[in-house]
Amino acid sequence: MKVAIIGQGYVGLTISAFAGEFFDVVGFDNNQKIVDQLNSGISHIEGVESSVLQKWIKAGRYKATTSGSDISDADIVVIAVPTPLSKDRQPDLTFIDAACRTIGENVKTPVLVINESTSFPGTLRNYIKPAIEKYSATPVEHLYAISPERVDPGRGDYNQKNTPRLYAGLTAEASEKTRDFYSRFCDELVEVSSPEVAEAAKLFENTFRQVNIALVNEFAQITNALGISVYETLDAANTKPYGFMKFTPSAGVGGHCIPVDPTYLAAVAEDHGAPATFIRRANDVNLEMSKYVVDRVQADNGGSLQGKSVLVVGVAYKPNVADVRETAAELVIEHLRSAGAVVTWHDDVVGSWRVESSAPLSGADIAIVVTKHDSVDERAIVASAPYVFDTTGKIKGVKGL
Ligand SMILES: NC(=O)c1ccc[n+]([C@@H]2O[C@H](COP(=O)([O-])OP(=O)(O)OC[C@H]3O[C@@H](n4cnc5c(N)ncnc54)[C@H](O)[C@@H]3O)[C@@H](O)[C@H]2O)c1
Image (cartoon, rainbow, N blue to C red):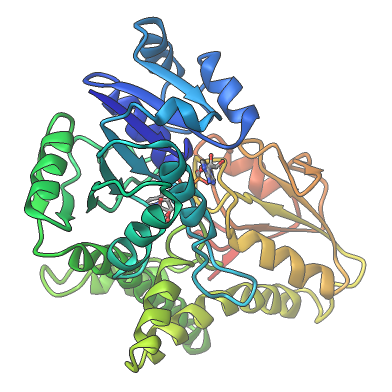
């Protein structure tokens, strides 16, 4: 069996690495640099070991490609391309459309098409299937299924194998074949009654996180106004053995999922005339946190940041990964620069970002910790500036949320 995986990023490469044990895998990506790197056995994704890639390449079971014709003899095609927001913060399915074109133009015999990209309910049925049919020169009866990806890059305890996987096909045959595929490398498969349920469940999982993060971010502002510690209060609430789940405040949410997926849900809700005010407000609260942090820092520093050197510590969207997509650090830096601060950032895991490089962890007037990687020494952060504001709750003895 040959599996073609369209998109060799966090999701697609992770699946490729697991699938390589059981299938011949072709990783199709339109980025030549990534493809060349992968074919030389170097992984660019946290959690995918280069040694695993090299093992499959050596065994002739993995090849990356930019050529659509390499997927033409696949039995299964998995879509794992980005689903971002457009400039006006609407669902942007242009990458999905391009993947459908690649499939339509190259796959001439019936295959199982599985979508792993996150999108709104109805995407598989009303968008992917018609798009592939539109791009196919002659009609092909493919099978279609959805199995939303739940991978959490950089996480050690849960991975492809032990994270239960939702799935549903457009037909019973598509569901059965999808189950066969994933059951090789996933311990637990959960079939739902329609692709729309699987698509909606994935969006709701991330919306649940988004609104709870927004709630705790608002709560941090309330506890600060009341003069009590948000962390102590949360720990106290967390002693309740049921009905409570602890989330922690931050400078905002980042990554490709939590700041994006809820907007897909809100957009489809509003298209169907259902309100999504709660989801929209949660998004705003999280986006506003960066300004709140900068306002707090400014208030602590004589009411002005004009000309002050400010070091933002950690620009990745979460600890121990190099991923900067939608990072809260970006808005923090923007607000600092608007306030007249001279901003540099330190993050040796990220290295370079927005044509700037990681600065030394020292010599600033003010340091603001947005993300704390395990590799960064806490004492070095404390020594990096006379005033340190920590948004992570991990640094002892400094100002924070
Ligand atoms: N990263 C995560 O933690 C995560 C978790 C669950 C779900 N998802 C979802 O999975 C999907 C993929 O996310 P990701 O994080 O892997 O993205 P990514 O940006 O890491 O990788 C996407 C890859 O697709 C390639 N690509 C873009 N357009 C292409 C095309 N037309 N043909 C072939 N390749 C193309 C890019 O070059 C890139 O290498 C998104 O819908 C995302 O919401 C991501």
